[in-house]
Picture 1 (cartoon, rainbow, N blue to C red):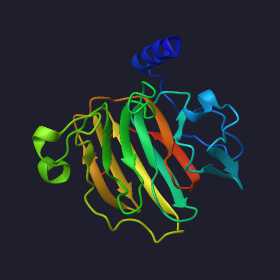
Picture 2 (picture 1 turned 120 degrees about the vertical axis):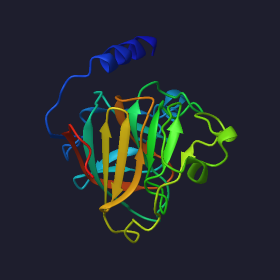
Picture 3 (picture 1 turned 45 degrees about the vertical axis):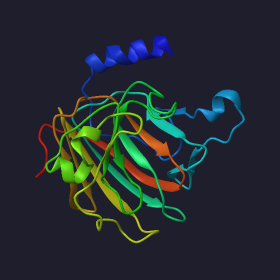
Length: 226
């Protein structure tokens, strides 16, 4: 683990340029690796990340993450997803680095929430970010934090951006330098600045609910969309 983290630190400081690409080839999980703590002691534990009918599927349990092998910066990530059954919780992590830093599960990162009715929230996981109207959207400043039971959630700008359960949603995440901007179905739902990270891996969560992904496209950018 120490050797892997050293390599991650090296490549974080030397992030190569990339061309437009899909993070999912529709056939297998090439380009990704799985981090599911339950599999440490029980290797035969079910893998919560599978490919089914040409889609990448997070089964929701056991909890864990599907993480890109490569590190990225200055990009637009376009994700098409839907909850396969009862809508619930999931998320996309950007600028991910140190594994299992929170609760022995979550990697150091900024989470863009996909939880039903809360899509577009930011969750700070040992990283931080600034948004307008912080007190109303995060709570009392003295309780802000990036770990444990501190106020790590930053509410999105609207809770009516998602499609009805079972329909496909499109989430667009733009990361440029220390800014992160998020749209859900064409509606701007969050825009943060002064992020404490500007590059890292991208991760999908298994966090209780089954989610199908049919698009995970990555494009390099030099400016944020308005």
